[in-house]
Length: 77
Image (cartoon, rainbow, N blue to C red; front, side, top):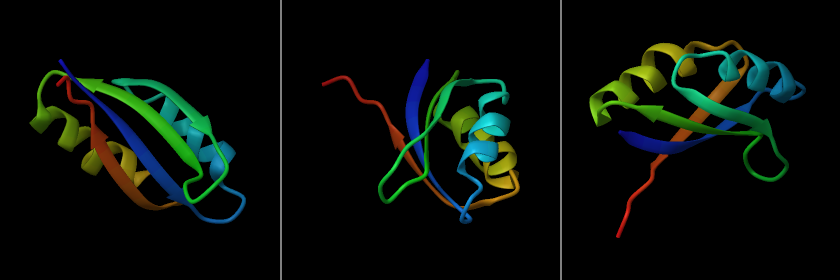
């Protein structure tokens, strides 16, 4: 299982609606509005790195109001 945090920037005033839509995507564990340089932070899980990439590119980045994403895979050192 691959886990990641996905940091999302949105259009002004869209953070809440983006978090709600993204939170309903399969594989998303949690999506929360935050303040700072990013507007929404998502915790996601997928079977493989490729599955995670597909989730981000094919599902999350297509949500209306998202302007940029940064995917941070969790590592266990």
